[in-house]
Length: 220
Image (cartoon, rainbow, N blue to C red; front, side, top):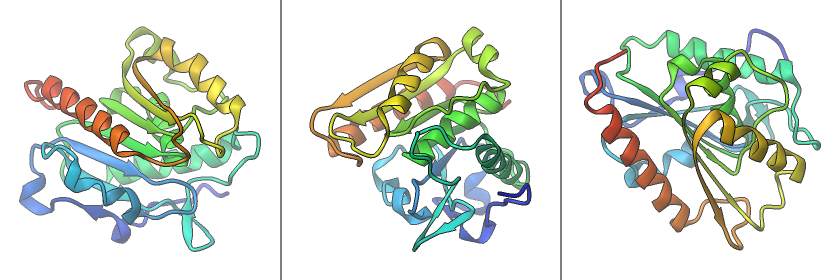
């Protein structure tokens, strides 16, 4: 992994462009390991209309898809690799021609880990995170203290039949999230490493709540 990791701006999928992005919230969507930007973007028709949605492509090619960082059997990825991916997303956000009203994060699996990591690295820049079948990394982050003092909303959904995320990563996430977020946790009986219709409905309700909360707030 090198520090030159970047987000391919030409690969970003947008739900709105140009003037339609003005003075609106931004919801950044982060796909899982070996997937691509079009995967979670397919959820867009089911999500609230308030935000502009941007689905990013992870920077590392892997098989027929892309990854945010190399996979780790232990469930605790290399810190430098995660740092490089986070820096790439923040640099992409800095370079946007229009400043979003607020910025939320939604990720699946490795993308869920990225959503939480971005929240931990730069908590002042984000309003909330949705973590679907993801986890927190083990290394302490600069924003952890701020999140403990001023927790942000996090939705964490996972299935009981998920055989992909190691138990140690789940336990680490269970330990960290309650003290660093206003947590909405949902566990789905029999759900494997995927997203069910029931979970999607819960995510939509969570997002609607966040946009009701932020609708009356001035831009940061």
